[in-house]
Length: 267
Image (cartoon, rainbow, N blue to C red):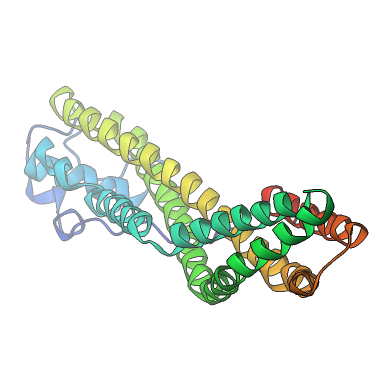
């Protein structure tokens, strides 16, 4: 999935408005001149001047917005994990498989006892199967919304990874401009930003994987519950009026194939 990355977050106002020409011999920056070093971009130069004016502690808020974005994505993911829609749909699907397996076992009994057992089993489970079918059909739209939300989170996490990578690259360009005391502050911030980038990358991978899992769940409901199940239920509806051994065998084959699909859904 291709992602369009946003431009780097603007530095705090104190960075942009710092004027090196008004500061003389302040600690933190190696060179005293206000001229920009060759090959140094303007944003990094302004940051260096801000450190000259305010000391290495200025770096404490550098990259803070990007880190807050990662923290917000973490909270969003936890919120989505606590939502019950996907969990309920999986539980309904598991219960449906269990009922179908019960009916399959009843169909497998031999002789006239098998006929009576299959019909009795169907009368018992048919109402619940109908209810579960309706619940799963109604779950598709909420699941679609959950999938879209997780896809959006994955994109935002990828953007955060890229934004933090730009800050880490900027830090490498900034390092030669700083005196030893300011480099200590810079190293601490680099480690913090790297930890946030690692978390953002993990969030991107997790939310993308979760979105794919929801996509497969929706496909299973559509193909298994909405398309395949009705044909099987129509055939099972004949059981109360009696079904000979050959017919029960045919129904068993249909049920077995449907259960196999639910357990191993194809794309």
